[in-house]
Length: 190
Ligand SMILES: Cc1cn([C@H]2C[C@H](O)[C@@H](COP(=O)(O)OP(=O)(O)OP(=O)(O)O)O2)c(=O)[nH]c1=O
Image (cartoon, rainbow, N blue to C red; front, side):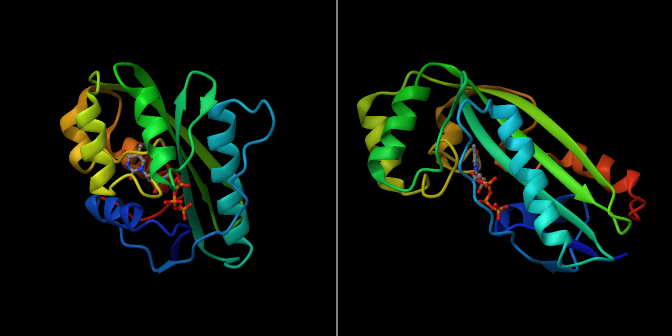
């Protein structure tokens, strides 16, 4: 059974490897990730994940196709994937000393075209960040392209007081749910 990972994220591929799964091919979906007006974060994450999977499944009709989308949400607000220092700084100032959600949606389309979806909802609590801590984090560049302007797999872990949920989901691929979906679709796993 061929498995295609519909993601440009090297982390998603590494995370899959952690549960002993190696995709036969990686074929990223290039879809429009603009949130719709008034779209709530869980709906947005699930919609984008489903769109990525559908787009790539159309190119691989007889394979399993796995896609995911990870969104950082402060209340109803969807934080951007930080592309500039000022965007990253705004994210960190907003997240400082508060709890926020990290929503990680996955979608798996099987060879018959049946789509299965899961959503992992996680809570992350940052310490109250000093100006100097934000400056140092900005200088690290680790925020680049990351949802919410941070990556838990790097030095931000030293600023995160607690998480509720799944570490792999916060990094970008909820491994418990991924394994469950792959099993449900008949993918050989131990
Ligand atoms: C919160 C958080 C986000 N991120 C990253 C993972 C994702 O790269 C990004 C969320 O963007 P995504 O759109 O989920 O993924 P992507 O653009 O990297 O790849 P693709 O769409 O091709 O699958 O934020 C971390 O690496 N660590 C974290 O702790």
